[in-house]
Image (cartoon, rainbow, N blue to C red; front, side, top):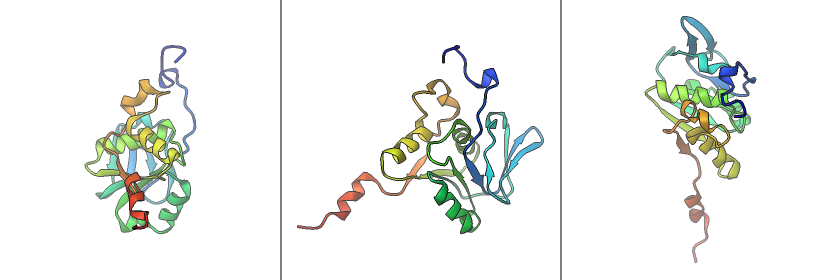
Length: 166
């Protein structure tokens, strides 16, 4: 923070890497910014402008996935349709727009938000970046940290189940 301010106040933004699919509309006023209900769309880089999230139909949960390949597989399987959910990915380490979208969904929707990530250092770092924010961008963590995020998948204690009995 060399200039003592954040990127948004300087009107500097970067292209988003994240994608989303599900019955959700991101709106600015009455204008629809993104409609993810028909196909996977890129998360808008100016997600901070979104002042309203509208669901085309109620959803059961939001699923954040670490990898683009898993996201694509779930989309191809119509997981979002059969399980009535929103799926979102940051394609690995999430950018600010993807973190902001997950935050807005977790804050605005009365459903649980889960993350499916690998049980390795990268997967844990991604989980904690979504959940707590990042050290580098600590001054923006209040606007992007999704503290109610729930981990799905293997846990370290699960390795005990793999040990052979003596």
